[in-house]
Length: 204
Image (cartoon, rainbow, N blue to C red; front, side, top):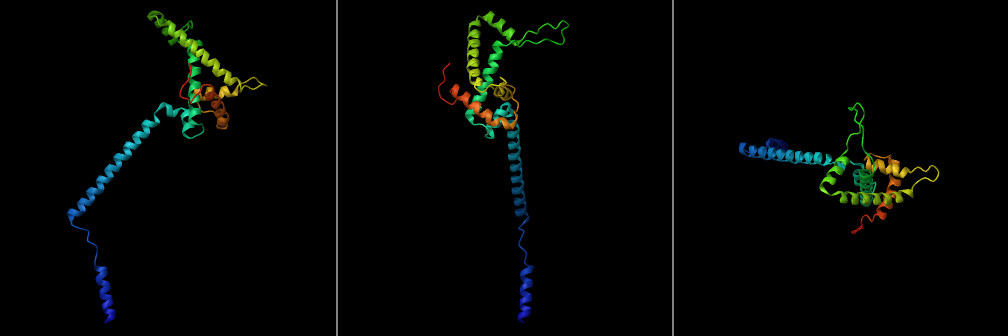
């Protein structure tokens, strides 16, 4: 009797299945699940779009930003790298002949550069004085920068590998060899100190 009762009780328990609820309840659950899936898709789609927009940022593509992002250089060193690139580009803008020859021209006449047009415009509107002041300032900044770079010039060969590396990193915006990161960081620290980068006030 006890065995039969046990078997009967076991069968009765196993025979009981959890209720799946009414059709309306199942529909609400399905709707809730579908809503959650739609919300998740919207979140991930928005996130992916933000990532794509972030990746398209030209500043992010620059190796200086990547080096700072992955802490190969400090934020102050990254600002010094930006300053280096700005100073060199401004110097070349005012004091280097960037005119080129056009391959379409039979006699290879020099093509008028943007600087030529700017000079003509400034001569016309009377702002040549401002242009000359900016050119002098760019030259002073460049000389000041080159004094810092002269400290890292090799005494034997006379070659400045530090300048070559910074030109690659800051002006050409290309990735220098990874083994140079430590040396480049030291040079950037010297530039930051010279130009008081990181301090609130700078003198022009």
